[in-house]
Image (cartoon, rainbow, N blue to C red):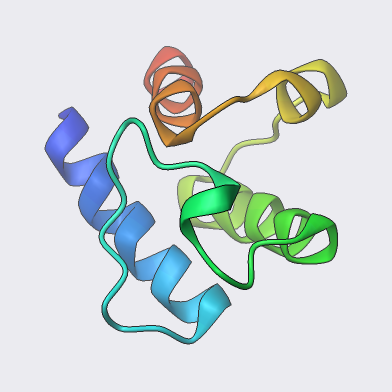
Length: 79
């Protein structure tokens, strides 16, 4: 799977979780870039991403991810 496909799939997940069709995630996207991305929505987002890609993040990964690019790197390492 190429990074472009991961970003396409992540865009769908982010748009669904945050109910905003205008979201386009980039490697540098962080929670401060998306209005409703708070700690509760972060949990929902992580669960949705795990389901989308059929994988589980470990707690250290969840707590240390600084941006979407780091999330993509973890996904790439698992597929």
